[in-house]
Image (tube, rainbow, N blue to C red):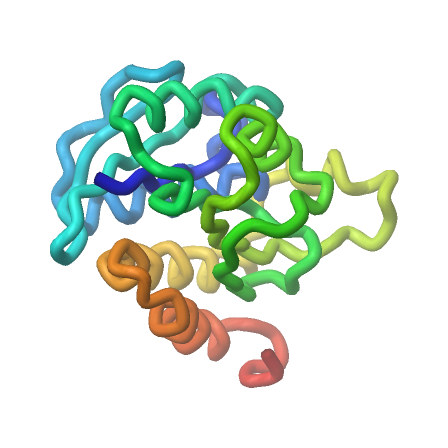
Length: 197
């Protein structure tokens, strides 16, 4: 079994925020692959999906971002899921909006959700970095990530989530480059400047 984790904050007031793009990706994957409704478990919401040949647990921690590791660690230990089989979807300030990069390990770039998971489990899990752009100054970051996506961002956001769901089996089977290219092809035409990425 593999574990896909979408990071975000629980509650309706956070649902449309940039920090919740990981939750949005999990919801899209669950819909596309006819998963059962999410149910409470591991201090989060979980469901299962079959992605290609892989059984995958989809998890949305409900611990708030700063304590995500508690939920992810509980799920991983219960199902005996190796660190290499965990993939975390999260917002990334250091990437332009709509840009996607898949990597294993590395720094946490100040992301409190990643920091919490690393503290609980270790660092060598895979990350799907979903670019939201940077507001320009450090002082504006908190308000920016906790702000809702703008209306003109919705087309690329929807395309990104749809493409992530369509390519989820590729990701589950380790075809990271193919998955990344799929998202790039879906999102790039909808971004300002078109094919500049």
